[in-house]
Length: 249
Image (cartoon, rainbow, N blue to C red; front, side, top):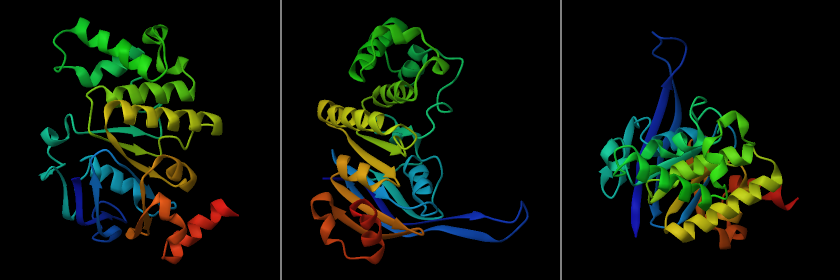
């Protein structure tokens, strides 16, 4: 069942200074649908517009034209996003308050949702266990964590409200190869555990093929092609074929 719908989305940014009328078009009429429980990869090289698309999906920015809706409601409405959409970003260090302990980082989205502070921290301990971190991590600060541990904390925070969809914006690209596989396997396990889905924004087609059900190829702000991972060998566009050759050769 289609839950998130992106319809003819366009986005541009002002260039050349505060008073300039010049604008650079980043997204051009992008349309696709995301189905409940699936993992959709959004693949593109640097400058393809994929990070901009990620921000629009999260309601951080609004499109110039077109609509992005979740269950028929615009994602720019915070009430639409709460409990439905969450995020894990590439830069795990800057996405955590350096003055917060891990337990505070994970509990942050639970404020106002848990019955009490004590209940919130019981849930934090359970969340940390689910991402492979024991209770000793509760009192650590972000600077005391390895990259993989920090990203696990960010994932625990993202699943705290049991969202139906998590946008993963280059969530494993800054990790070492072996740690990337561990995090991807963790995401698969959590998907099964919670019945949620992902939109996996990345330049790494191998990681996307490992995790995702379908892949959207984004080139220079255009949605070139969308295909199931079991049919990657049948891609039609030159751009998709070019990206696939990078993992074959």
